[in-house]
Image 1 (spheres, helix red, strand yellow):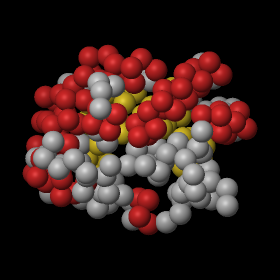
Image 2 (cartoon, one colour):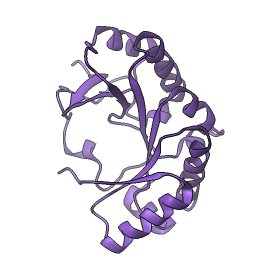
Image 3 (cartoon, helix red, strand yellow):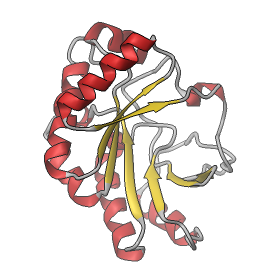
Image 4 (tube, helix red, strand yellow):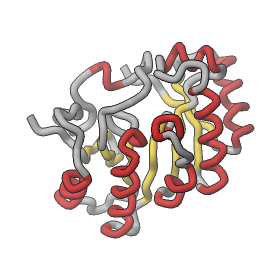
Length: 202
């Protein structure tokens, strides 16, 4: 069965380049079905190569598309080399399209190296999932594979992105208490990023 690499959801165009992720978030949309938007399936039998990603981009009609977002059924930085190469390819083939990354912010842990500067060099916007307001709560809601250190690493990654990218935002989903949403806003401001509250999609 064909797995979609490029797909539309509402008014957006998204790139699904990996299914790997160090988190298993309690609210993750991928736990509710095979696909979202106009995609038929977003689960890969084998991870896509850069050539397969490029072909999917070449085959897609980007007429009137203003933005493309790295966001699929996995964490894009888990396919770090393909993420960077794909962003550069979009720059070459569609120079007027705005490129955004939706990420859990754990790229440095995943790739065991600093990544914010390089990521920022090939993207226009970076959206980091803050998810919750303390390390303990973060670990509980994201069920990540780096308990105890993931929250701090995510904040450090965000701060580094702010140094190199003009549009960095942090998000939480409206499943957490109102007081935590306000605390999240303060954390976001301390990191130098913009704040956005996301609506939980069932």
